[in-house]
Structures are given as C-alpha cells and as structure tokens.
Amino acid sequence: LAWDIIVQSGYLNRKIRQDWAFSLKTKKKKKKKKKKKKKKKKKKKKKKKKKKKKKKKKKKKKKKKKKKKSSVIGLFRLSPTPRRCPMCQQQQLQPQHRFVRSTFLKVEILWDFILK
Image (cartoon, rainbow, N blue to C red; front, side, top):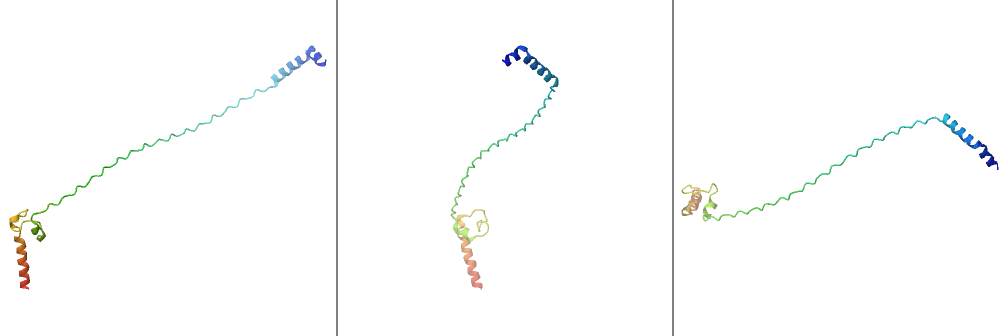
C-alpha cells in the first residue's frame, strides 16, 4: 500500500530526477589517465650460422719409386763420390770399364800395405 502511494505521488520519480541532477552537478569529470605505452624490446634475431660443409681431402697415394738396378754394381759401391766412370769421367758408368776401378783400389790398398 505504501509503495502505491509513493509511485502515484510521483515522489519516486522526483527523487530520482533530483538525485540525477545533483549527481550531474557534483560529478567531477574524472581525468583519464594516459596509459604509458610500454616500449617493446626488440628481440634480436640470432643469425643462423651456416655450417660449412667440410670437403674431404683426397689422400694422394704416394707412388713408390722403383729403384733401378744398375748393371754396374761393383763400381757404385766403390765410388763414394759422384758416380762417374773412373776411367773416362763420364756421368754414366760404362760397363766396359766395369771392374777397372775395383782393381785399382785393390792394388792401392796392397801398395799401402806393402809400404807400411
């Protein structure tokens, strides 16, 4: 019953209107706070290092040098210095002068022995 009287008299409406007007007057405008923008840290992109493909080195096979068998062995052993023919002084040993040097040496050694 009391509620009906309030509604009919329009009291409620007035009250609401007054309150509303009052609130408009008194309401201070709220200042909007400026939001500080956070600076985004730039992520440094890591550069991917390219893996270098290692080239496999081919191993060179060493060729074994075949020793030439000299037909004039006797002279080689006896001559410590450059291998020339003791007779004709040529670079290559002549097979026909093959044992001359060795005989010379033997004779020299004999002579030394005798002289001593």
